[in-house]
Image (cartoon, rainbow, N blue to C red; front, top):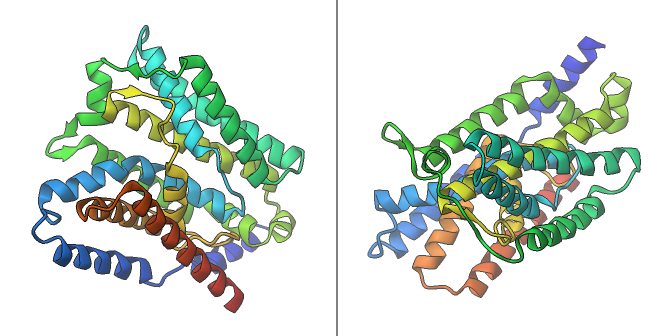
Length: 322
């Protein structure tokens, strides 16, 4: 059985999107903006660093979403988890240490993921419908408990560690992006759990025959998604020095676009953490460039929606060819 799992892992690993399309796309978009916005400071170190800092929460969520989509599930609730986790973190910080606040926020994300996972596996409900319902439920809870008010954060230690601080010359948010990338890539490509996720998304029935505990791993995947969204909420809380119920409400589309652009297929079985992080940077670069070009928020939303449409179309076309 171990040999079968190893064989499956090797075959699925070979199927990872190895094309350099996402990297070429990144360089192409960078080159276009460098030319078009050469007089607007796009290529300055400060602006490029700002892109990385602003996309850190998206990067963190994209890493978790890779596991979800690869397992042939979807989590639409991450935006609401971001807001609720950030609010819990900010509220707990009023009377407790940053450690307690962070653990409380992460617990919220993990519990939501567990709740979603149990409904999906035990009740056999589609993850799309379950997480869509959770999205609305959590959005309402966030508004109710704060009475539509922002919650400020004044703890300097928390702000430094999760927001404006740095590790030597490297900004702390850049470190968080690198940590998410490193841990996510290693778990996805180098561990048995990552192999199981690939196998489940490729063929759940065959995975069961190989002895993989499909339902358990699906629950874990949803908990990882909730946990990554909670961490994103904590990072928002540190960078913005406060929390509001609107945090993360527009992030879902950006996260899914980043993951799909990075080579993860909507119907499971194939994914790339590195590609998702590059996709996140592409989306951040697009947002930054479109703002510098003077596009309105509505026009930016149209462009992002078009990108998602093209990415989905290309993904489905590749799947049909396979």
